[in-house]
Length: 110
Image (cartoon, rainbow, N blue to C red; front, side):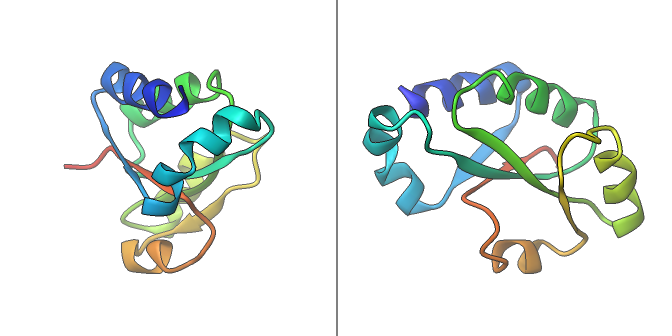
């Protein structure tokens, strides 16, 4: 159910979602444990990303934890739109991927 919700979410926002293999395999666990969370990061800071976050916030288990943009300044400006969240900021995709802070990434960048 969670994987289906995430696919629907990606279709609605015209973006792509990349899940680590262990997250894909844990889909049945997420269904069995509604308190389970998937820690998302976004790559790209545009209106489509804002739409994804708004839609994702309605999906059980969605937790936005990081924002990646070309510059930390731009990532910070975008993160400021979500003051109720404590977001980590990145300007390097490799650093984000190796951080251990995320389970899945929403890519809204060409």
